[in-house]
Image (cartoon, rainbow, N blue to C red; front, side, top):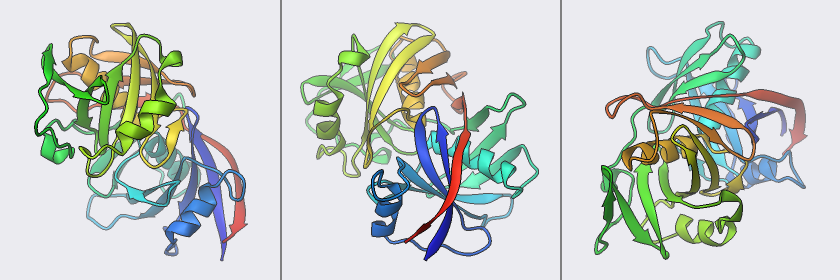
Length: 279
């Protein structure tokens, strides 16, 4: 099969984007891994597939596959690339589109300055919905949130449509991401695994962040991870309601206006190149 693709990136988080709006595309996990392979394929953190919407009022369906080949629930940086792609390729003339994921509906807005704002919906804190098994653990409360003991550190646990475990570190450059990231990702208390975030608080309106992503390893940026870190920091009393998140790939602006509000993420989305690959 000869497959057209577009390579895109959002703050260094990179994607292979596939257009399945005109003809269905069914890829095996092995084919997804081949596409994402940086030596034998195109190379990407995730593979994104654009499909027609299946529900009235929904413009498109948004499917996300990690480089491991597994389909996952959400990717914020990918969502920004998604709306840039459908607009630039003439699939819609709208600057605001509604897309459905495996477990959610997202609103994506293309701004006049070229950046994209994604309505990331409300964060989820109930352990069963994350999912997270806290049985036998005693959390420490700080501000209005719990910090759970795990692997010798304290983590804030929540979902942004996918599970996140966020810890505060003094220096993100020296954080043990390569050591602790995989151990937290695959910990038995997270039955669907988890994204492990390492957050350095610079000020009440600025953080630095590294994320070991579930099924992908450390990436240059993680949109849902940035949202999770800011929400956790707000609940813990460390951050204000609007925060700039400095990742290794760029800056994301995150807003959570109040506890019942949706989280808004704004950042770049850029096409790198287009091509075809034989699978």
